[in-house]
Image (cartoon, rainbow, N blue to C red; front, side):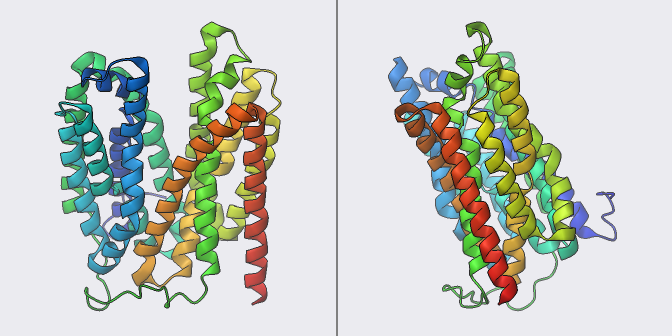
Length: 400
């Protein structure tokens, strides 16, 4: 399918623009991972404990503020237009990233990371635009393509963050990122074409969700989105320690990086393919299948005896999880009135951000107090509960 056929299908051109824009903004948000402790130290923090503490606060600040504001931006997108929210997010991110490169102390860095979360949301806004503008029979595929771009940004960002700062400097890297996002602001402004909205722009959206005929799919997908992020992030705090028991000391950091990356690679490879399948067989079936596969694949990860077994299993798990995000978004999009899609998808995004916070915290606690195998097994149980719950709800809806 040619994505460039924009003359007759504006949604295709929109998909290309937001795909590049989402990739770029995610790269900008994640490139600081390898250099954050160095930047925190450069801004005045001293001592291992203080550097680690401020690095964690600065990194989590963006997700915290983004989780709080995602529903708001979604509702405003419903009321005033999805393109306008993308323009706001790209311009805000360009400013925030540039200012991060000008910070003078760690308090300013944390404040600016909070600002980035408040003003950002380009990738989540892109999901809303694509879900709303794409023909329903192509929604899963389009969202899968966009999800692949987002996950690619998460994979490439840290690599760029490890390469650029030694060449041009830490501050200059942030300024360059801000400049690139500003180019995406221009592309978003002049290239995206949003379909005309029906009704008044000031039409009041019911705050109590009274317009949603059946809320069970919505609550099921909110829980599933949270589970997805918990499954992806719960293993992160223990990977390096877990790998240390499988390989020689000199290989630990390299193998740990590979283990973390292959899951994202698997999701990139499978997201558009599973999205296209979901368009044919049903998005909810893909949600249940992906959760069940992930639950099964987590069990042997607790009992691997070599690093390559873990790498292979994480790759397979990434392939399974790749279909979840586009399918979740598609189920929500098809279950709510068009004028409420942005607001409800905003809640879904917030739930995923909560999972990004809960996952590492829970994984670290269980790994430290119960054991590392317990992290994989507990996560497997959660995914199995999610699969069973989604299957039961889907069957009840069929009978209704």
